[in-house]
Image (cartoon, rainbow, N blue to C red; front, side):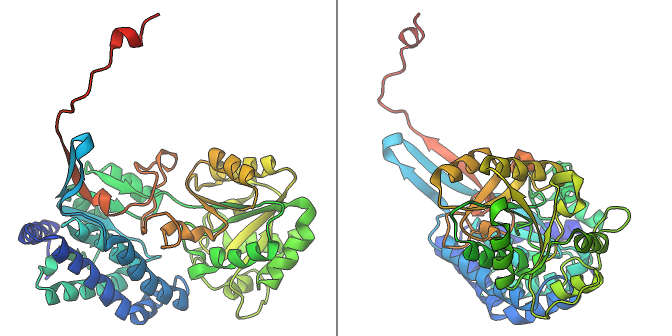
Length: 453
């Protein structure tokens, strides 16, 4: 018989109480073993996820299931999260970490393994418990993920109820869990984020993605094309931080198209051909065709009436309009990028901004391929996103070890995207950090002198 939400909350609170005296080494052991067990079952979980959801690409999901444990552990292993985590005697400051308690994690069908794992690693790092409410479409794969984590906890002698899942998720159960937990991490649609913020419980939400990428003059076109294959094709384009619009200099159109084709991308320039994809990808009501979300590029091409090589990872569609003028500019959640030329660099930046404002993705992520420091700074100062990926694939927004972003499976979009956090959600957001301060022997400001005429 399935447990009620209240019963799960009670078990989670008991588990938190059981580890209240764990030291940093004991906590880190739990983090490590959770990562290790998912790494060991990477292929099995990937196969289950693709079979159950019909979303994504098996080999890419295997990579997710191996890379996520490794990168998260590499980031978390040396971080303090228990007791006094920082001391600054000169400032008379101590910072002390306290657990939050029971954290509800609402997870998507697109990442049924790594989202529960990544969230758990951050959550248990702060001596908290996690209860997952998975996407119904991915409940089997997500449940298996949690069962493995619980197995790892048992082997450590820790309470397995630090990790729980609602095996038969419903909207009502999700709402009840969010209301009764101490904190929410909601990864998914705008509607889900809004529900989390409306629950009355503190929440970290994640907005939708739709990243634009600019190719600047002077950058290696072949390199940008190769990186775009990874940025667009990873896991069949279901990543929220995957490249969705590629802007290139108009006088380099011939070279750009050739480089994309050389990289293995199926490029469609003819307006009539592009329109066939437009009609295949979107239904008459303007909604994406769910049968094509997250499917292989050849499957999508076939639906539009084209045959492309079986090993094609990415489709590129040339568009003439930016933003609301073309439905193809919306987040597609497939291995597809649109392409549009620009005249001046300033014009490209304006188009990137307008595309997000009108077609979605504002606040999330953006990319640029450039060797011009002035252009990079110009772009970064104006583009309204929480992450700008410079000369790297936009999915690196998740925070691999070779950039400065913290590893995360939940990427906040700031108030642009109706989120509370403009950044990657990590372990520090799973803690209440109190500051203990002492008086300093320093003079107070002379207000009269400071504000004298």
